[in-house]
Image 1 (cartoon, rainbow, N blue to C red):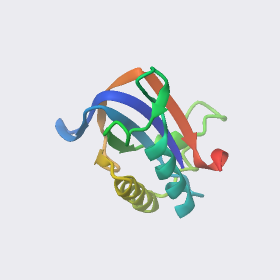
Image 2: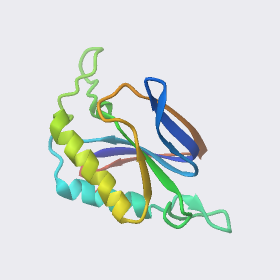
Image 3: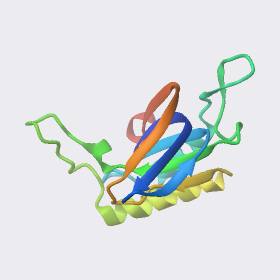
Image 4: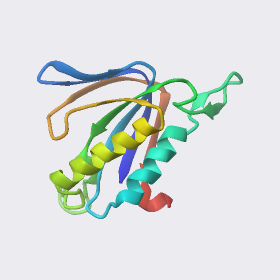
Length: 149
């Protein structure tokens, strides 16, 4: 499982001109599910993200989590995180999970984030989405469950 974490002052996702998810301060997550991912991957990354200390404390150090600041999550599915561009000029997405499997894992991941006490907004799985955000810092972190555990 791969997740791009972006600290954000505000963000929203629209589908066909309609806002389907919006947050104020918190995290925007671009979430990719791989064909080899298991339940342990989503459990690990949900816990990691909920407790990731990437917001500043009173001393200006990255020392508090999205939970600590009462922040929100905007979670957006993105199979293109599994693009393999080693050969040719067109990406190969064979490493991404099949849509049915990926959607189930994505929904379970969002449920786990909510169980951590977080407010979670989402995009629309499989849709063409427009994402707007104000990346705060900027802070952008790449997480890959297969290389972290």
